[in-house]
Image 1 (cartoon, helix red, strand yellow):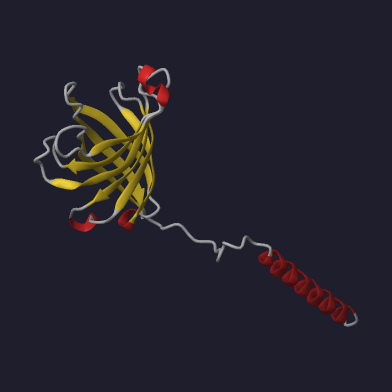
Image 2: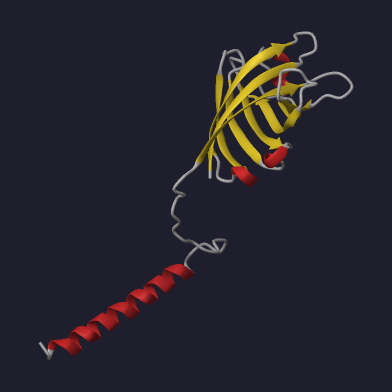
Length: 194
């Protein structure tokens, strides 16, 4: 046994140094834009929040919050406005009236992505302006089938108090004015965050 000890020690040292150099070599091969990596434990508790507010899409009048920025040449012949892109900075309020207290704004865009049916691709950030949530954001993305009673889109992230947020948002049309295009949509957002 005493004779095996130096051999075993030499083998372990060789193994340690060779694996260390392999690890260092693999670290050198990491992408040039990766600065660090570490395993992290998930928080023991996460918060699940349910928010409800009303989204006001104002497309006409002296101060629209929704502006068409691109349109496909074929859009003139499309019954679904396929290819149209609209930028938004829509107010979010506590109640369905525009005079209701302001929660924040929905900033982003929606595009008419359905060729044969009216379906919007929504990509927007809910920027909160009230209380503890001021300047925190929730990012929504997904398909909005505007003629369905309830539409569901994904919460894909957030910032501030909603950093690493995940969840979903449900949209229900509250009112739609066919003359002006003014639309009020109730949003229920279910979000899990730390």
